[in-house]
Length: 329
Image 1 (cartoon, rainbow, N blue to C red):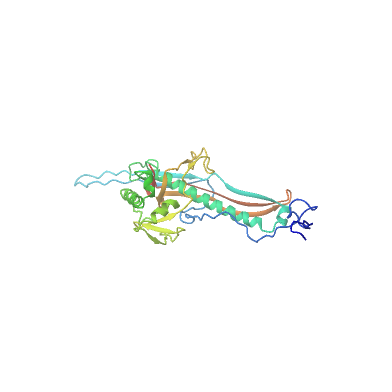
Image 2 (cartoon, helix red, strand yellow; image 1 turned 30 degrees about the vertical axis):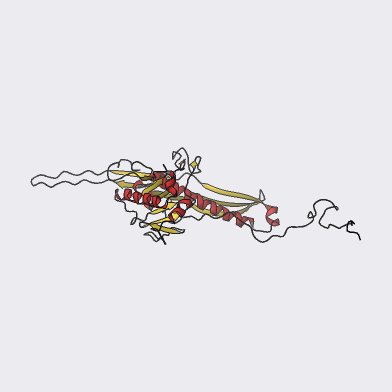
């Protein structure tokens, strides 16, 4: 046979002997279905979220600073003054993840789609919850006065802000650590000690990477006074735990699912200058009207499988003086 001779080759993978040589082949499932990368919740279990029943609104009350007087012989002392105020939170939105699967498709795919979708719903809700809480911590820090009506100037204060001199300072380990120290001092000037009041500093991964270059910080494990842990790789700066999270908002947010006219679009805002936020559980008032509920059910009318995950929760600034934020200029 000459080298330039040609001959017929049977292609069993073709249809009708033409076209794609793999058209008649079938795929073999490896057993792996790659989901999204999980962003772990940092704040789950750390911020108290009591279950709210019988009302949409929960309230914390506050009392202002009282005054002193000097006792004078022969003079009946007059009564001092005391002011009271309150902060309220209304939970009025159900957050839902729902996915429908056709009856036949469920039986014909080589993996458990319902379980995989439920896992993805859980990841999404965990990130959503963390971001909502971080959002309100930042809002608390940006308050210029107390959130308690009637208690301005009566021992209740606004939040704490520390603005870097230059945007590039967010990438300078020494200057970023210096900003942390200055922020702590602002807390202390309001009689809040972040090192003893269960504060954490949460920063995005780029800032966390910068802080790792500073030898003043140490790696540690953190539990608050109630024994609740902050999840993730933790550093400590001047006695305050530092955690990294992608869930801290850093964009212009509009149309957030928890925002509405009633709460003044409380979860919208411009977060593009946020480097990190330092706060304690006292900074937020949060609650669950419906705790996270996961359901998988079949509807005989539509012949579909439903995978649901839903909850109703919210949060708002409480004690603003227990919250701080580091900002770019």
